[in-house]
Amino acid sequence: MSGGMSFELSEDQQTIRQAVAELCSKFDDEYWMRKDLAHEFPQEFYDAIASGGWLGMTIPEEYGGHGLGITEATLLLEEVARSGAAMNGASAIHLTIFGMQPVVKHGSDELKAATLPRIVNGDLHVCFGVTEPTAGLDTSRITTFAKREGDKYRINGRKVWISKAQESEKILLLTRTTPYDQVTKKTDGMTLFLTDLNRDHVDIRPIKKMGRNAVSSNEVFIDDLVVPVGDRVGEEGKGFKYILDGLNPERMLIAAEALGIGRVALEKAVKYGNERVVFNRPIGMNQGLQFPLADSLARLDAAELVLRKATWLYDNGKPCGREANTAKYLCADAGFGAADRALQLHGGMGYSEEYHVSRYFRESRLMKIAPVSQEMILNFLGEHVLGMPRSY
Image 1 (tube, rainbow, N blue to C red):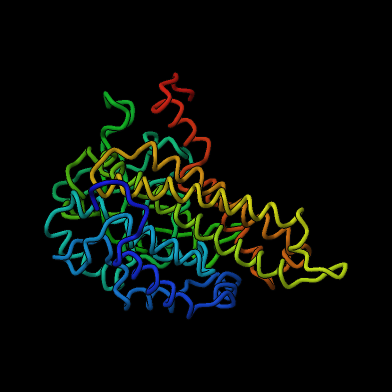
Image 2 (image 1 turned 180 degrees about the horizontal axis):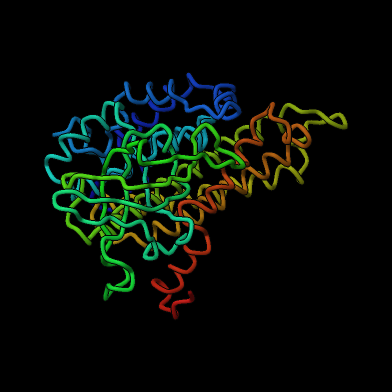
């Protein structure tokens, strides 16, 4: 997609949108409420997405994927969220859609051949192991350590907020191979592995949380996990650089998911506002309720434009840090704002589970925290775009 500025989706992109919306319509709000309340992985939905061939969107064609760009991936995840699946649906497939990029770009041919076709057909669940309890957003401070022993590594450590760890067969695991105090640059000495979550050496414990409960978040305790050198992604010590490749696209995907939740929340609010009669008139007639929804519409539209620009830049090989971060910031804000206003318009019924907006509210709130907080995005924009002194 090169040439001048165009605001139109290509025919293929429109087809993706329609096909995904149609597939997702088979899984209604009641389905997602059941899965959320039961803390149960949405396997039927995952299987349907897999058999539709959607999981391999960004995987190269030689491994059975479609080799498409981040623009298409964001359209897919926006439609998933917008169907009412919100974050439970998006998180079930999010990592499969794009999380394997470090392996695609830096993995050995053997590693790619062994894993990528299985990613495409949905047979392989992978989780992403970066965050640690004592490191938080400061990734350079991770302490999970991989010690080289001949043609193997022995890994010990602890990870937290690992989505889908319970369902996953493998983990894309960031470790230190050189201690923090022995590296010149603090992001050096980290190594990435794609390896089996061997339950004999890995203890996985779910975290009780406010929402998005169909997809588990977990603490992962790693105790003497022995991993063959063949499971290493790329070179030893370059792991942080490989992870960085995926950060901007991940922000765009999260932005798209937040946008989708905002859209479906707004849709529900408009419907209820037109139908619910109080004081002999539909409540949507009241400007006090109508104007906030109109304002949310404007904010969602504006946020969507920055996201479209960000994905276009990425797919055309141009720098996109500013736009990717801005899109995540604005979409998370607009999506949560819309969900909050939708809940308010429903009044007491919004607080009940019957109309599902309370679930959108809970799940959209997460987007202002994960995978990077709004504050960290402002840090990035302040320092790297505005050229102000680093604030942290």
